[in-house]
Amino acid sequence: MERAWRNCPRVSGPALPWALAAGFFVVYAALSVRQHQRMLTTGYDLGIFEQAVRSYAEGHLPVSALKGPGFSLLGDHFAPVLATLAPFYRLFPTPLTLLVAQAALLAVAVVPLSRWAHQAHGTTAALVVGLGYGASWGIASAVGFDFHEICFAVPLIAFSVTALGNERWRAAALWAAPLLLVKEDLGITVAAIGTYIAWKGPRLLGLATAAAGIAGTLLEILVVIPAFNPDHTYAYSGFLDQTAGGGSMAGLLHLPLDLITPQAKATTLVLLLAPTAFMALRSPLIALALPTLAWRFLSSNPAYWGTDYHYSAILMPIVFGAFIHALSRWAPGQSANDRLTVRAALAISAATTLLLVPQFPLSRIIDAAAWRTPARAAAAHRLMARIPDGATVAASNRLVPQLTDRCTVAVFGFPGIPLTSDWIIDDTHAPMGWPLSPEDETQTLQAARDAGYRTVDQREGYVLLHRPSTGRSDP
Image 1 (cartoon, rainbow, N blue to C red):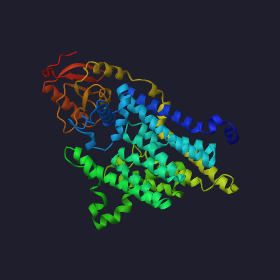
Image 2: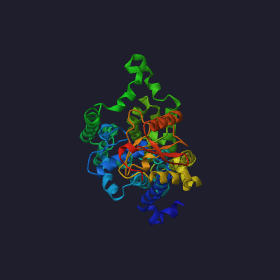
Image 3: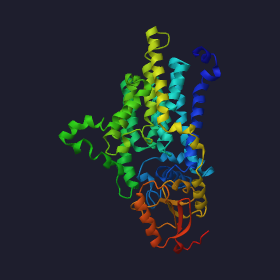
């Protein structure tokens, strides 16, 4: 089989990485689009990011009514890279623009990794690494949960790690630099890349890159974000307040255990390394994952510890880059034992990938239910069509991203945000339980009726309310 692949230049040459990327783009985009069409996307987070991109497309800084009236998203996270989506959003003003862009960005990271694997060990390695990264649980979890700005970081890290592995130091630094515009915590990843360059390559370039990463993160967290935040703070610093017992000696002694307990942290570490047959540990490139793992595992927020959501996506190119780098110790043409080691590692990697895929969102693509739009969705769209463009709306979390392209939307019942919208649309049949419990949601809906909102229509468990005192007439 290996010889057959090598004799097929359309597949095994430079076309193979791009063919893998194209295939995964189709899978990612199909899954994301179907999630949205089935009304499984949410205001937190797709709606927030669409409001940001919509703001840029309209020519002003990003504002999200979902975070609060007039809330500037630069006071939440520093992600000006989102502005690059504005031209596409002007052409296609829909949340699907964000989901398709994310699919493309995550897929293109396959290219440098599989190309490097092909150069190091041939077509089989390129296929195993490309398919392993593309179907990895970290990427699958990101694709399965709305849109996030870190999709820009994944290909940047993939190209930077590949450059590091091939000792192209300047290219590695240049690919890493834009991470400072993706999210404030990624400056520590830039610093890690700079430290690696200083260790293995040109010291001055490495130190300059590391300094830029640290300075960038500090500037964004201590100056830029507080300047835009209404409370003049960085909201997420509190997640580290309980770390290490507040700095006490007993807490510091407990710190190593905090990095692997509760069990969710240890599970994440095992699943992170298992697709590489734990060979990634044999490459110093794996150290680039430590800063991200440290802030996640030291946080008091349990959502950061496990394999859900999008938090592990940026680790996938690092882990698979370290895998390729480790395998490069056994170059083709060496002893039979070396070739056996490489083949065994690739076989274990492929088998682990196959075993993990059904446990994570990519498996939904072959679920017949993913290709059927629930009847309730049609009812919800009929109700939402009665809401005029430009209206202010309070909506259930899963209904929010269906409206953010044409209305000013907040999550119904979100704490701290007063109910002043013209319209309310709520899912009373299958409430998410967030931000209100089903019981509290029922009470809040009744309180809205008591405050003057009246029912315009209700179907399949969805209810649409309007407040006539705003002066708008019912459509």
